[in-house]
Length: 358
Image (cartoon, rainbow, N blue to C red; front, side, top):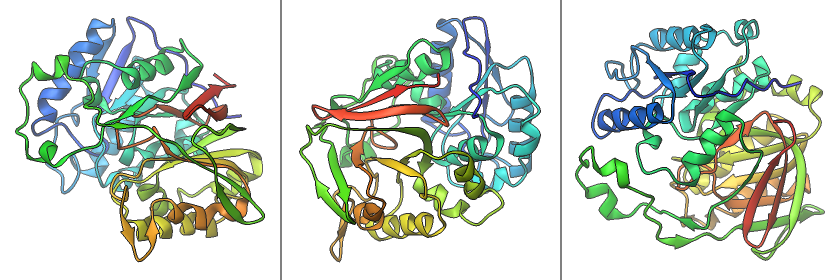
């Protein structure tokens, strides 16, 4: 039984810590201030950790031992009701080297929310500690005007909603986005996602080892425990002491894999999925929900693209594959409770997640 943390309420304390990336540079040092103001206005108290704004580490907020110590402390403290990660990053795997997930079993479950590199904490939190975690925005994501992503994230934290759906449009990053100067503080109070494309789900029905593409309006559904995160991270956890999937699969027969990729090219994307498949992670897969890949989107390498990188590796499981879902690095992002039992379905070019254990 995977434990659900207690919902937070106004007056509770939210801890901000940086197990990977710290808000040490602009625009993040401005964004964290704006985000904290918005959350305080919602009625919460903030306990900002010493690591939250650090940038003195090599490729990480600070010394991984220090980052891990604060993360463990925040999780164990009874005066902190939930934790929001300060950012994504690259080297949180070095932080979890110093995290004792078995020790965390001795403390009341607590909501932790973050995405990307935070998969390093959320995935073993579910598979080793047996506690749900939210794959959703880090603290800087709450600096903008709140839309579906931000409202849905707090709906999960506060326990006010159990049925969620995807969003209508997509905000792809453009070349202009990379060249722009870091905006001023007041920019974040009114900024919304810059939608520039219509969403279109790509759905496959897999039978007899073949992946058959369906209409974007196709209706499919499956139930199971949501599990996954950033594939870039998960591929590195395979075979380490943080790989508890054999035991997890023995205890949980129906698993819905929710995956997305950040820096992976189509080739490395495909290799990463192969790695998880050959390690036996997908043994109990009831379906796959695949987010829009950040780097691989629209790429083709020797005939390998974002779609066959997935279908060629997963088709033999003979379960549905929902792709280009609102999960991950390409906004907007639908927050997902990893470890929760849910029904996932599609209809009319939209994704629906109905939680059965929240």
